[in-house]
Length: 283
Image 1 (cartoon, rainbow, N blue to C red):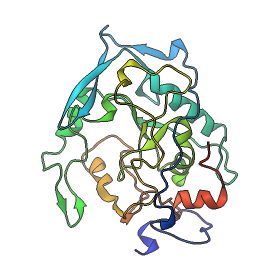
Image 2 (cartoon, rainbow, N blue to C red; image 1 turned 135 degrees about the horizontal axis):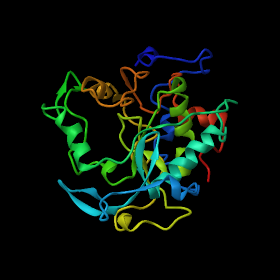
Image 3 (tube, rainbow, N blue to C red; image 1 turned 180 degrees about the horizontal axis):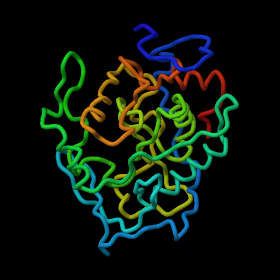
């Protein structure tokens, strides 16, 4: 696969260009995620649901879904609702990036924004209804169907899934998240959606919410999207813009097929971090 399948955006290219990572690292599962405590959430930042019973939370269960609890408290971040128990970790991560913590090559401020958070059943249905085609349709190796999860089966509906502005700052947001999100409990779980991250930490700094009992436990950084994986079709993201889904449900700086850990400068990011920041993934 030629390097120009992924557009470069940096003025100084890395010393070597790779596309599918160092295969000697294929078995690397990465660190167990969630070593940072959540930021304190002010009572004034919390909104409660109009219905005292709260919003129902759903979990995919085999080929269907089930209700796992209710949430009554949310925090609005960048205009998006985030369930309170997860919002603290999101806010801690946003603040750390803004303050230049865990920086990249001396670059200070990284501005992380939430582009999507908790979804109601009605909102997930709205996404699903945007495509009447076969949801698994593939044409010439490119997914042409609806990549949205069926209503009731998205982790946006139980609150652990958060979409971030990964294309911002010439991909520096994605790079910072790749290097640091695991510290705050977030990992990627959908290979072809680099904006989609989920909280799979151990609830460091707070009591585990009752709705997470029985199905949620700490994972490792590469447990869902492997450090080394087969080159993947990344063009699926075009569905979101073609169906008028909210921005930034897209990854415009990515083209063609690639291991999805490739950075916007054409280097596999975990390999890059091994070279530049030895021990970056150490707890």
